[in-house]
Length: 494
Ligand code: GLN
Image (cartoon, rainbow, N blue to C red; front, side, top):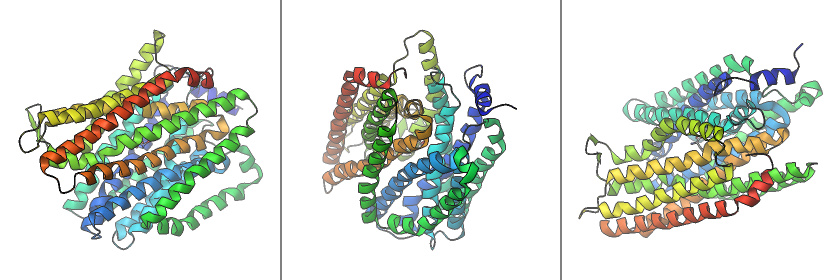
């Protein structure tokens, strides 16, 4: 009989650039993101036009759901490590997401928050754990890991792009029930893809042996507990004030928990690697806080201050460009950048993760400076060039590609096996805080320009972006300056 280790070695000793299992996870995640971004794309519009919420209330509500979704990844990662293993977590999370969208498909008006709550907790179980499984396809030190995550990341964005378009279009044009129903169908495809391909995963993602042996009831309590939590989540998601409280509490609790786990680690090297991971996580909060302006202030900027000509050839809705150019550039460039990492590695000049992160911030900073430059292209009505705006998105996406897939990858490389799920959860928890701060920053920029003339508004937006640009550039410089400390903490991990 083949042991678990032998089966794992067989997977990890793959030839070529990508293991075949990566493609299975790629498609499951692609469909999951279709469903997720499909739902997310409908939320604000649905709340304003169907639930008749005021715009600012709907915006706050949207921010609250996003923060919740990503905050629950910490809990999902925790239960995966301790009790369920990654496969069962994915299965359970997928089921909850399907149930959530079916509830919304049946009556989105009446059961809105109930459906959303199922999705929140389902995503918590699904999203971090599928990413961790990608990391486990690779042996420690395999230089192809980052390229694998980059490919996986384009799958994420193919789903995001398609779902983001399809669902809201169907909702507006035909029926909301059908649109939410589509999210359910697509999530079922994701889950089926996973179920049919999991046999190729060897021992990856199996339940911890201690639980399988004599603590099966832990598993059932986890399922039951997550169902019992739903009314609680419903109460919290539906009142943004509760979300604030939740956000104040979950981060510090998560951090204390991780610190306790770190202190329990026997080897100094293991502890130091975890500190390095925490440094990456903290920086990523800033990254997402700036990056996520896309859903908030940048969409208002696009609506009011951009013309609709791209390269003098295409006529495009500037908000469409705002919503989709990022995914478009990711899909195109993510695999290419992955291959560039492999190419650089062969020549022994691949930047270390800290420097990739630093580079990510430099690109992010440059993109906000380009957004600032938009103002010099404005006409008398304060309408600026869509070309320059799109260029900014291109540069911002390069930044994202140096940070986001690399962040997923480094979480799996720096954490010991038994903490990989929860650390991936921490990585996404940072996104939750990023979204949260993004809302505050964006509201600040938007409010400052209330009751102003178009020219003054343009001025306020662009100078706000210039400030963000400077901060991002400074963060990049700091990261590169402290890279020698972080590298030391990372030991042999690149
Ligand atoms: N767009 C990526 C995804 O959906 C990253 C999300 C994040 O970390 N905030 O997976």
